[in-house]
Length: 315
Image (tube, rainbow, N blue to C red):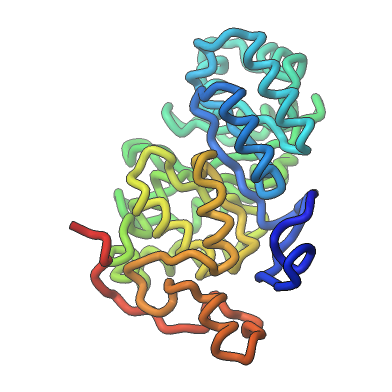
């Protein structure tokens, strides 16, 4: 990594976190079909903070030579390329699953997502077998629990309540089959945890409690917590803050928008405000540094109190 404007150049320090190749604190970003030239500019500035790029189903409509150029570019920056889970879902219900994995390998993809977020949940025996097939081909494999809609989603008791036991069970089966990590479907988390600062705070004793029970049973480093790239920016910012507040700067976060990588990394470092959470969201690392004679506290991301307050940018 080139020098940044911190102690390597200006003689000042910022909050530290893990560096590539990471085993924790992973950031997966979404590529929704942008041009590779646009992404090249982002990578030149921010590649150090991107671990995986997920290429969505829109890429089925993109020229193959452009797709290959993107994948080659990502890999040159030590970034895993992963097709969106829905792409593999389509191949599987068209009965081309195993063959499709081989073609993804030939294209240069290094990671795959095994999910059923838009279809009826397959039996876990099918998911276990497909996970093993992908691992045998040399892929990093990320399983997924939860569906985008409540109907048919066994990981929820109702639309806003997790089935903790089932979430733990499915996660363990995917990991035991060889999955490297498990995605927690972002649409589920938005409904369970809340999708605004005020809603998240109101659901601490319900949604966050259930969520934490699942994570504690498996281990936070085995999960990647998604936040839909399609929801409003304020929702994404609030959910990213909440993951970091609960689990620290090196929590694994997925589905960040590629053009917002600088914002997410700055939130991880406590150098960017997230309104609606009171002092806890107001530049916490900077505030901690100012409060302790230039040295932030060990757990600066949870040092200051939460407070349900009006977002000054609302309305």
